Length: 542
Image (cartoon, rainbow, N blue to C red; front, top):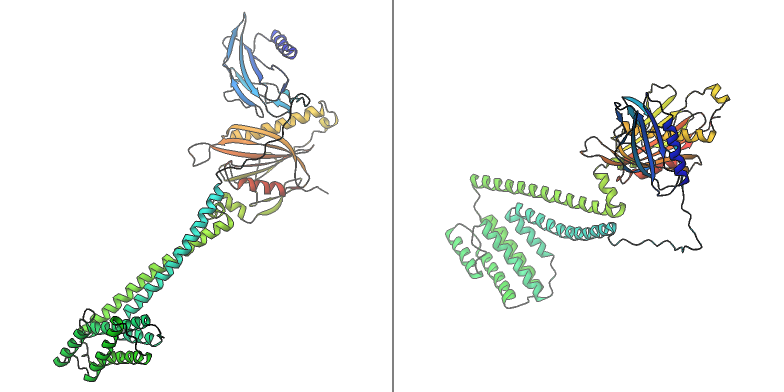
């Protein structure tokens, strides 16, 4: 309370010394030392004439402080002037020494800049004697683990695709055999089937039954296709009668001995199929030879086809060939699709779902992190750094500033490398007039303001900033300014929440600033950022 009284008393004394003719700006805080999380009242007050036009900042930036509330402008009339007062409620959750950034107020169109206000944020002292301390609670497992769920789905897909692949292969081979058989002429197909029966080894009655069923089907199908006899739907006796009639009519000149042999084969087949007879293997082999002789003799006994029949037969064969090629294309493309899908699922199981998906969909930062990186040196003093691509040099009006960059604020990943080494003033160097510590603080605040101004000039808003001091893997100490902002990226209807990180290398002669910005929800940007930071090495001049 004593500090608050002294501060406001200082404000009152300053008010008494104001000039009556021109507007005067004064800045004050309720306390210059607060605790973490304690509210800070920041006051801007203008003394001006009653006709003066006073405009306070509409979107003030107090980084690294957070703005809790901005009160309306309070106007107080005195005997000879007006007092315009604007109050802001600020807060900070990190301990340390800070400066509240300068604010700009317009008085009759002229700019007035408030002074920097130093502020100390103290930690909260914990009484470890009276206050009980507890261990940090352990991490709790999340019930819904999407990676495990995705892995289970992928393994299920592998099993389903494997079973479907086996079934597909079986159907493909079966269909291929059927198409091939359809393309063969009836005589060639019959002879091929009879040759296949020659290799059969028969032992059980069921095997004999299947053997004779296939044997009689061969001769029946051939007689129906070539001799145009209704053989498949006829009994053995009916089939023999039809052959006798065709022989007597002279349309199918078969030998009587051949017909007697065919009758014997059909009778043996009926006994095996219906009476469960099991003849000797020698008899079954002889019956196959008889059927083969019947097929050959039938082909020889058939009249030669006419030219019209030959054309129809050729056209039918061509139709079958086209149909076969079409189905082969369909089955082939389906097989390629099935294999590709299987390979995709296996790749996701091996490398992960998101890496494979993002590679196929050309995720921007996935391409950056997977590409060939470049290690190079930039600026003076030279800074060695590894980046996804070579940094482009930009020309600046200030000859003392060197700037290199990759992409823009609209790019998936933005890099800006700035070397600012202005010429030193010999007289100022010989006779310093300010405290070195105060000068360092002001220089640091100026660098922070320059970073913020750069973001704001590009259209960024809602800038939340933190600072820290870190040591790079190379051992170089740097100041780290990081946080988030909203940026209107090209092509997006709304502002995109982005993360940024600025590393400050400060020297007596100047400063090196490395700034990186990317979308906050990007899956690979933080990995790119860390790889760049780990590669930084300051090359000392000899």
